[in-house]
Image (cartoon, rainbow, N blue to C red; front, side):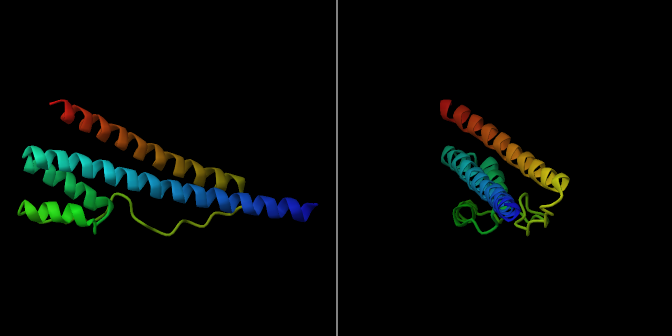
Amino acid sequence: MKKIIFALLLCLSAAGTSFAQNNMEAMRFLTINALMQYGQKLYDRGDFNEACSVFNHVLDYDGHQAQALQYLKDMGRLPAIRHVPILQAKAPQPVDIWDTQSLKKAIEIKKLKIEKLRTQIMQLRANIASQSET
């Protein structure tokens, strides 16, 4: 019985970490897409300075985003060189599954990151909506 409970806890903790990591990737993807839509609207409107800023922000998330690079090239701009990307793809910190405090802390950190990305997406959607109205 103890072995079954141990195996179940081990599977749940691995699944939780994997779920959080997949959730972060999904949020990153949504953020990039929202930024690209906003940048394209600015570009279409002829607001090239602001569009350039937005496309550089996209490159903070994904330095090889082909569409953002193409828009910057079309505007005759070079990508801004940034030292630290907003979301670095780094290896997850090892979490001791036996230490509940460590698990709780890791989960809270992931929740905060997800909430920050959600807030950014909401702001971008509001900006896109206000740009569409004009």
